[in-house]
Length: 217
Image (cartoon, rainbow, N blue to C red):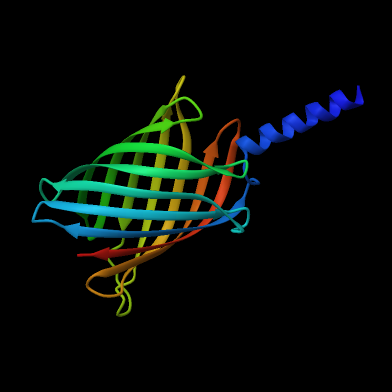
């Protein structure tokens, strides 16, 4: 009986580790690097790579590599599509997700505040579990003020994730506050704080300190 109880506890711990990789309230570091190439007046090509460290920023657990092509219809509307190759750690091993996606973005301005809302539909293909689809909407507002020679500009953003599996459900939210800046004509950057709320069996929160660098050609 003792062996059965210990085995059951071990299985439960493995399952809980699979669902909740890190503690509720975990501190993480995310770093994103991207390149954007303007092909002509309307078309641009984008590349992106991102790395994430969890467990109080002590373990690299996620990375993705992204390629996208985007078209600008006018000053308000743009659209695009791309492919993201994701590697995420599960029980000490990096597993692969293939993620083609399509995007539609509306951008405008009100009282000097620039805002945009990006709609993304992505197909999540896995070799180790059933495929899913995810709808994401990210709303960003940039303040009209710029500070110092780096043109530091505050912004707020919020992104929701709706997972389509057996049922349609909101399973993630990312609320961010950050500072965008311009180092040179071709090099831009961001530093931000994000509170990510995720739901598997229950809602958990993650505190993220993130940085972004973008090269524009």
